[in-house]
Structure formats: C-alpha cells, structure tokens
Length: 146
Image (cartoon, rainbow, N blue to C red):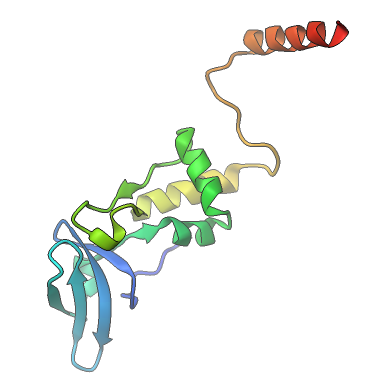
C-alpha cells in the first residue's frame, strides 16, 4: 500500500516541527497557503516539491477509513497497546487540542496489523497465561454447579 504524497486541500501536515493545515493551493502560481495551527499565522510555501518539506499526518477518522474500521475500534486497540497510539495536537492548537494524529509509519503499522487479523473476537490480553485461563474456567464451572 502506498499513501498519496501530493498536497491536499484542508488536510494536516507537519512543517518545520509545527502542524499546519492547507487552506489554498494555486498550482499556476506555484503556491500553497497554509495556516500554522500554533501561531495562527498564514504561510506561503512553494507548491513544487512541497511534499518534500511538508509531511502528511492523519486524523483518527482518516485512519478508520484507510483500515476500514470504526474510530472506536482503533481507540480500543490503542488502549491495549496493539497498535501505535496517536500523538496529541498541541495545547496551543485551540480548535484541535483534543485531536490525535498519526504519522505515515503509524498508518503502515495499523494496516499491517488489521490485515493480519482474522475476523472475530478481539485479541485477548497477552499477559494472561494458559494456566490462569484454566483456573478461571474451573472457577466458572464450580459457580455454575451450585
């Protein structure tokens, strides 16, 4: 799977250690207008080769569409530590401060994880060993016989 590298309107990118959102693209003038979410400042960058200086980041909704799962499913697997956790937008990004974002490698890791899974019940906690499961089942059987 290969993610698109072209610059897309209204999407988030990392540029010079800050998060920006693309507001306008004018290919004929070779300009990309972005807003720095921290300073609220508008920046004008060259459109040509912009994908080399701006790196795409993805929201949980975009990830959900890519892996064809619901957002809450992704959050559940994140809590269990089975897939990479999203990074939070900065507190200074007022409108997006509670949003999470994922970088390209996180997307590849999640696609790999979900493609390797078989449909059905979620992966159980890895810390429970077989002996503990047998004891729990035995206890359930004893409770049921009363």
